Image (cartoon, rainbow, N blue to C red; front, side):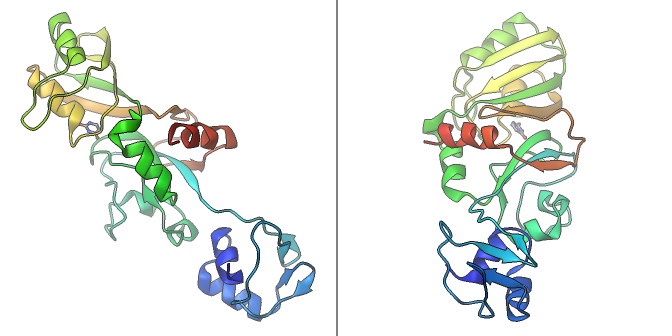
Length: 232
Ligand code: URA
């Protein structure tokens, strides 16, 4: 791959900055200064340094965001886009949210530039579990059982799922589908309404309790392994 792409993928430079750094002689490849951004490097074996610091090759990035309310899961240039919560260098890495949360839903949102894994995690055949903490208008045991059993909605029948209640207006729901407004529509179908929705688990990832709303961090290696395994 081209040297400027290698450097841009590391996240430390935009493609333009990478080109400029190379032309200024700040970058070495296998110990030799290289001033040509288009030079091909082997990302598996090359030793690349910028300003004397080793730059390892990173193919994909995985970010856990604690999505705040009033933000939208889009890559569009919208002032409310969740992408605006990431520093500018991440915005140059072709990253996108893995699925969507509604504007008023908060919590765990994975953001990545790994298209294949995203596709797999969102595909119905992988049954990726998503757990939401909710607040709702009061529901009783009969409604809970109806939610769990699967409900006929206008355009699909929801798959069986798990619903636990801590009291008639609070609980957790784990679904394996990701249809538009799914949880809200399911509660509506049993005569309730969701008044608060927070995703706390997604495909084996747990929302990091140390992240405040609007904060993000890169996934740890074990967390990346978890989602890659699930996406196989
Ligand atoms: N279900 C919903 O209704 N909304 C979300 O944001 C996620 C799941």
